[in-house]
Amino acid sequence: MIVTEFISVDGIAEVEKLPKVTWNDEMQRFKEDELSDSGAMLLGRTTYEIFAGLWPSETGDFADRFNALPKFVASTSLKTVDWKPVELLKGSLAEAVRDLKQGNGGNIYVHGSLSVAQELLRHGLVDRARLLSYPGSVGEGKKLFSTDMPVALEPISAMTFSNGVVALEYAAGGVKDNLPPCGGDGRQARGGCCPASLSTRSPLARCASYWLVKPQMLAFLHTPLCLARHLPRKGGDRQHQRRRPARLTQPPSLACPWRAPRPLFPPPASARP
Image (tube, rainbow, N blue to C red):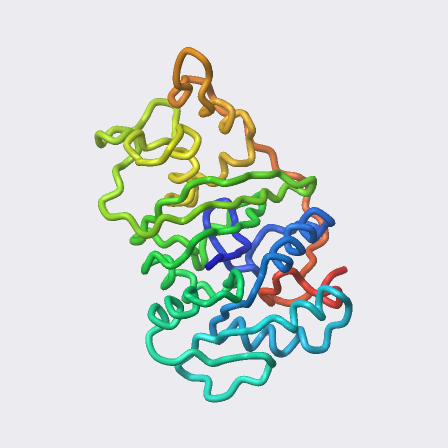
């Protein structure tokens, strides 16, 4: 089960509130990779209704493959669904997803659908999180990682695109109770962002996990120096070197690919400039 979201550096996952960037080939390849890896998709009611109202009318190879994916919809209010092939899940979401994960139909992607994604994270049913982090903060809005639900994440990859967006992928380890504050002993680590006692495999993993538990720390992903200072080196651990992070810069605002506040992943050709 893989959750894929657009997100700001302070953790807001409402597409219409994200900073303006131009959809580019790198973002398209990121989504092409997801589609190639997809065996099905799981959607909440709102995202399903938006997708079902738009994608069936799209044409082209991407749209054809996207429309052909099996779809599972988590909703207690919908009575019928008609974006074929589609199935309306019944009963407990957690139980239904556990049954789906026992199948052999390939990876299931959750697009948007924040309430569904959060419920799956709460039950430890998410295997990976793939995020496109936009270069800027929003301030207010719905977050993927809520403050009362710390989630252990192990970094898999991070790549900065030419438009300032950072593609992030994490292995999700489920909700963790009593996650320690930065420093592990109740004190703020000097110069830093890492809780020393997070039980992940490397200093970089500990730091990146904390960035997503505390979404505002995602801003550091936009400076390579902050990542570099947490990498191990011969003769010791660079986790808490006292180096000041590089000053963050934000690329100039570019045309927004969204013509309307619609959480499309990616936006179909008709919704781009």
